[in-house]
Image 1 (cartoon, rainbow, N blue to C red):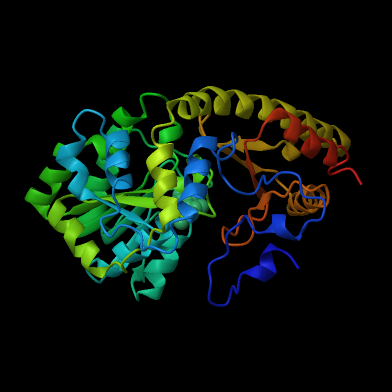
Image 2: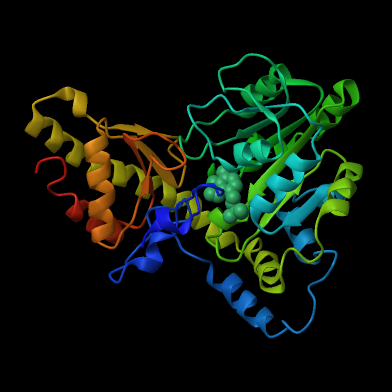
Length: 376
Ligand SMILES: Cc1ncc(COP(=O)(O)O)c(C=O)c1O
């Protein structure tokens, strides 16, 4: 049994991150885009403590976690924006909630080659007309994942606002997924749409366009099993509409306690910014060695791997230029207890693989598993 059999792909969207439980020799998960530092200790302890309150309902107002997250997002003026924030059972709950409440009509993804698929799944199951990324027709619901998972493309705030302006119909909805954006740097807030209050208000006033910013917190804080996401609405009235639709207590007590603690862990964020870039660059150098060995063995430059994505990100999207080599890479990684994400299921990019950035000692194991890759 493996990842592909876990998902009922006739009715569910495939995602990575399931292999680990089927591997007796499991060592490290390279298949999900979680933080290489692992789960922050203090927040994990807070979640464990909260388990002892499981005979009580979680707070209906999601406090104090919601205010703590608001302080993390807007350290200077959080109290002005807190009422525009709603927490969810992972970003996935909020993606579906917002898609269901958008005015019916067309849906279009971001301009990337491929992007995280839940937006499209939700648009399709809600009966929307799907436009292609290259279509220049504005849509009345557009969803851009920025930075993009899996490709690692990123629009800075100026380009992002321009893309929104020209791609959404008047009266439409825009969802911007910034789950990977806090990895940017200590200054991530200044390049984030979550800080563009005037732009969001004026787009709503002038064109009745509603812009929502979604974050999955399960990646940067490495807590995919806990389920934590948030949505920033253009106004508190928009937030009330979502609150009315949301099932009560969708974020459980351990997840709320975790969030409340984790956003105060500044040392963890500092380490994230410092080490992710470094480990990513070193990882790519080592992978280049494998690519060069394949090129030499095949005596063909066409086999040189292409490494995609911004240098600050927690993952690398790689075109290995051959379906056979991509398959072999996935199989060998799995056999060595270090599963990776194939580009085939869900993304339909059979010559691609996605690797999470991980600490060097774990990378050693993957590199060793691929010592003869493409040369059998
Ligand atoms: C860009 C992006 N958004 C949202 C999600 C959903 O995250 P979750 O529901 O775990 O919070 C993911 C998960 O892979 C993602 O990569």
